[in-house]
Length: 493
Image: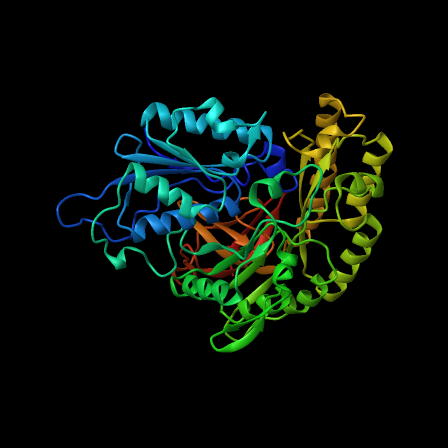
């Protein structure tokens, strides 16, 4: 059986991974990234091999990359099959019930096929009735850790599979081991979250906000660019809050003083000569400072993309208060208008929850009115799902399952029509796109408005001239000829 790395944007239900109804394909599945890395044949024999299965959001993927990089630096090899692995690590997601089930199934599969399994990730930190959830279901696992726990995982690996002798330093490229295609990569700038949203248990698993030093973040970004990355996707639990925990302390980037803050970070990233995309941005006034960068293209081609991923979650002031979310729908609508005045090409992606405990018919209709007024570009919607440990579970008047599902469906119907009309405006225009894949039909690309795995695609026809040929990772100009509710079609200009 093939050991496949599964990255599926939070292991959430299909509708939560949609962009205006986009089929939930998640991030592209891929085999472990062993190709292109040096072989680790060490004196005295073959290096031990470790299989790796990663589930969850890009932040979990970043944890996985950290562990894989450390494994490589110590001389361990990776295996593409359970059978050839000396040990298997499963990186889990525990955000909602579907994610828990998927993670537990993956652990069970690894145990059955290999027998030696170490578990890490969000589910590893989850308890039920005072007992660890993973240990309760799978008592035979070798070790269990929480998220962001490279040191603990490596300690468990050393215990059950001693490190090779004299590992070669050149086994690890400067950019580390990556799970994404060579032309784009996720850059995690912080860990944890200071918010206490009533539907979320992330802080209990990942802790409070801890910002990475800005020189460390920039060094990683520079190494990614040197390795050929053309698009950097900035991720965290709350990108807008970067540096709050260290009071925006001044660090040094290539000898230059730079504050640990989202505005200064984006300014530095914009000078690297690549696309930079911001995810998980809360609607704070500080966002206003970043928007002017989105109108500019640096002389070397670098750009902060006119794209904001902002989880609004709801529009009702009462529901937002029950959710313990910041801001209100009125202020959010005003902000959206102001942002589009500053940056007319801005794409806004967001997520919402339908059927939150206590949500009335009128409050759901209010959310649909907000959607129609805001005219967001890319939207996903969850039907509310109780998560063990979330305080929202104790709220009165839970919405029945069938009503939650019906509201989610209606919400996505409204958004699909909005998306269809907004994408139709691009027909006839020429836009910049980054090519993700070349195939017999031409190619699959993304515009500045599309993040990988969660938004739409731009399907490019086979070039009719040799000089119009393209390859994965290239940024090309595409004249748009057609559209639907999710995707665009066009030809290289």
